[in-house]
Length: 508
Image (cartoon, rainbow, N blue to C red; front, top):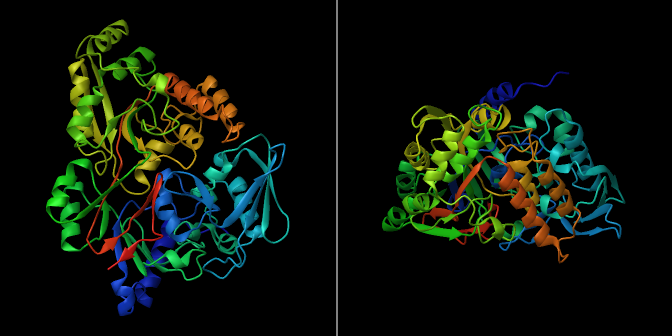
């Protein structure tokens, strides 16, 4: 039978929920322990078809992953209580916890994990496939042991499994209707969905069968889409929402209005993506000119209220994958930028480029970039792509239509995973894809084949970062920490380098 379309399922789900009255306030205890969180909805509620790294923030509401990261970025047990590589590094075995189950009652055992990854390999619209291409096949060794047989050495996998790649979905739900799973998640995470309206909101209640349920103190979580940055503070103060990320320039206002502001180390880095396949950037001299036209110091001073740090690569300077040899490359040099443009045959003011932007992120950044490019003679116009959960991804990440776009990375659980997302042939943030520098790809393979605790690991990883930054045209700008504003009733935010989690969060 042909699967229903996602749009069709959206209508059916909304109608069913309206009839059943789902999503009511519940009992008084649940009402007191309710949190309203403003964040981006995921590109898909099915981890197999989820597209972006940021999706893990919301996908992890309904799903648990095989592993998870702690606040220092170290990999820790989750669904899997342990894992081991064979002496030759060619097999990786995860030992699952006992008595796990999905919210539809299906046992979460080795067979379920095997089925999930096999679907990730074979499903036509899978975005999981490139993330697990180093795994040749999957096997089980009893009900609680799942075995990955690797086609090549890959010591990054325990870290990769801490994100959406390792977020296991119910094989029963997938077998019934994969299209529905993209709109209605069935996982084994801390919460269970009770209402969803696409591009609007998703409501959840606590899942008592979550393996770490004792540390979930929120009984009901209501996820709503991001509001305009200019109205977020007012929404928090009024009680319309309890938790929201804010930009650095909003911190002073939030504190003045008695909101709690939490900052935490992140892997966030903003960039101006450049497409080498589109004119005028098919001439590498133009892309190089843009590198020297950008004054990162001005960006940080003007936009980040002292909380940001300049970076010219897809990692913040404090992260171990940041390459110190590249730190001072492409310093602001407008004279050099003008000379490169002249060499490429572009007189001052003769070149006009279009910059695609998302109006809900990078507040003020597109306009300042526009001004800086203008100082070296590059004219530009801004084009807004609607910020829905699918429009930006379809226009920019999938179709790769723009010549330039203002974007950024929130990082990934594995640094190799993040490098491939921004520089790899199938990387969603590689606007020049499927182009990827061959020397960079070779360096990535060397990093994957190196155990994390090997003395040469850090050096090899930083070399891969260096090759990607040097050989890709995109221009990295600055990094910022997680900045989250909350009402006073929400305590003990749990922020790890790649996401916001809800274990340990309390509500007064």
